[in-house]
Length: 210
Image (cartoon, rainbow, N blue to C red; front, side):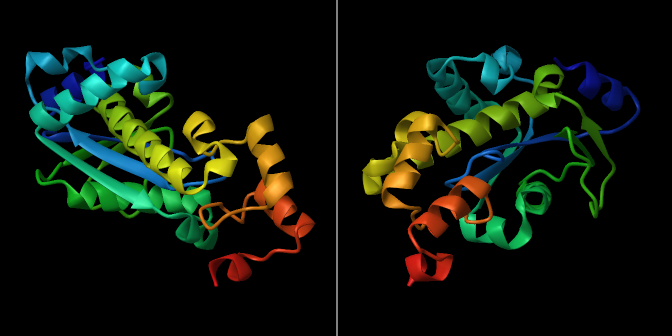
């Protein structure tokens, strides 16, 4: 998992930050972006792509990463900003902010899938980077666990949508809830399932927020 980082290190690039997001494809809730500079602790060797881990394993590694990584930064992009920027631009902006917030200044960044424009340091976009780069996998775990916990909290405020189970992604149950009660303040109105439900209920984003 550390082959990319090792190759960059031999070329003089260090520290190296991995960056990843969670919630890009959801139609409700925030987009969460994390940046991680891994340390040398042997406890970090179990880091793997968050999607390949159980929820329990992710939660355990979340604590290990925060305790033993050299630096961790988390950025939360709320639905309003996602609607204003578009999800792709919001994703890139979140990555830039996360790198800027690291306590340890990275001099190279590895991102999952998408290159980041406007960085003051060189970067490499790796397709499925969370599966092959340890630092990106660590960022994936931090982003996913953070976002999942937010969605569980939102479920308490909006129980009719079932956020705790589907985490804001488009499922049959989520679409049915949207059709029944319309969207909430935490839905992304720029996403088709949400805008369709809003039209069905004669709702606008401004009317929900007012």
